[in-house]
Image (cartoon, rainbow, N blue to C red; front, side):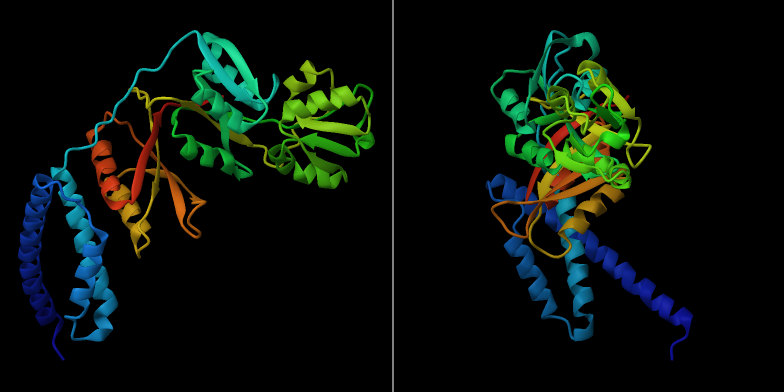
Length: 374
């Protein structure tokens, strides 16, 4: 048996050779990318990567080491790709200035909804016209038709998670996230004047409102009926004028539609917050922007998502969220929505984005924006 010092000396000698060979390989990979650029060739070729892996696996004498060799070769190629991106012309990030006043802003629901409240908190007195729509997608359609300058929509709740439809619409319509507001959401049981909690047999609310108050409703044996929007539910209950039917909505909705607040703050999680996003036509950024959102797809190969996360880690960037959504035309394949901290005026962030483009199948930067809390 070899002693430990001998083993370490031998490893050091091998490492010295490996580093020299690695350096030589990286220099050649630079020559490769320059040649491809000069001859208008596709830079990254997945077929070639598969060929390199298979070729090197055949060279392994100890077949027990095959999985380690596969990983070793794959990591070398990944590092080469990342190095090659430093010689590619970075994609031009076309940042537009935000429109500041006389805004036309669209939201889903009616006055008194949480979307309405989020709009007022985010834009303040900069809004000239507030346009409401019955469905989330209607806001996207209105922005596409240039009926509005911006739209504001809920994207996720701290208790019930993502609102998947809006994730899909962001990708489908190709708009950008230009702002974010985290709104503290208070859900309340509303009823017609003179009614009590004991009178209420059924409540109407948006599905998220029903989920957020599920414990209270179960405790009081109240049936749930989904409605397109919390404030719309309040308006509907007011119109019905039935003491056995209530709504889950805000206190502002109770005030607007002449209802009594029968029970306050009935949401399951007392730190209940909803994240609203502002969508616009253009990619906007400012010195105050602190969050970046992206969407990408991956090649269907081992380690593809790991490579993305490794790039984020290596650049010392804080990843805050990753969400997957199915690609409708490709069963068991996914879009990935990735949020991380950063500003597009930071060269390290731009460098990171260039590397992410290189290791993903499709990639789109969908926002760099300021985050606000209300």
